[in-house]
Image (cartoon, rainbow, N blue to C red):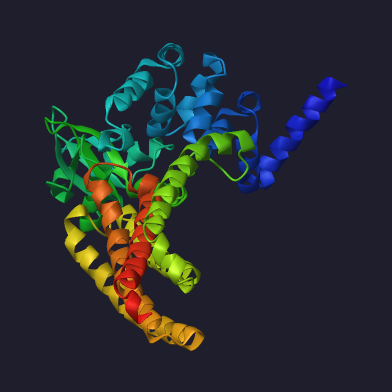
Length: 435
């Protein structure tokens, strides 16, 4: 009976993956690692590779660690090399070596090489399986060879000399339109755009955008072709990073999914919540400084959340726009002055408009000209500073080579609260005689 139940469950999971793959994978992600490993063992290598590609790297690595090396080998063959290297790099060294020993020498060598490059460098993101030709190869010969390689995507044809140095490239469409008897040297583009193996992902995407290339050759320090970067994979990686930034801005983990277990969620979130609590006490301490002023004018306590809320929203808007610009490579650290000035001006103008509306509303409510002026001026100051902080924080963290998504939100909340409270209560204290 148990055997029949297991077969039925396996058949059901296979059907779910076939018909509803998008809905099935989050369910798989939330399952115990042992069950994910069992699923990988039951599936064909191609299907298992698709599942691993969609899982978070942490979960995928934990799953393959529980699959026998002889069964992992065919799955690794089906994976893109950079993805396979990423997963193997997360394993314990002994387990990793055991898996690599089951692969053929060429593939294991490629994966070992990829694992030696810094994370997010061109070398770690490239596909080392690149097809190359000599300059005297004819278009017919190159076309025939490409047709025999069915599993690899070819967008550009790369031409190398006798020692493997890149000398030219040809877009695949142009090569197919050329005369079949022409040598590649007569139709290739010399000195094509390229990137060094240690270049950062930011540099790679910038070069791709400048030249509009579909693929980019990766060269070692001797100018030898060692791999290719494809625009589609880089865009997907940048999109994943942007999505991860949205998650980590709130202190959640990039590895957490909607169906992750409560225990996992608590473990990943609690630390940042404790940090946030500390910063909340800091903002409360600022309010405590003006305890006497608040005791004399109780209306200030009622209006405090208005100032803090508006400055917080202004800062969040500036932060979101700046974070998106950094994630999509629309801006760099060198643009800091232009971005911060723009956000400060926008915050000031919005502050004037919102401050006037707030002052009128407060005057109608309190009939106090002094209180209306205090909150109006405070609104302008706090919103201008919030816009400045929202733009400055992620750029400053990027310049320090820190992840701007990880702590920007918490730092911003602290600054906007403190500035909002300080400006409102400070101005009220200074002009207490007019309240």
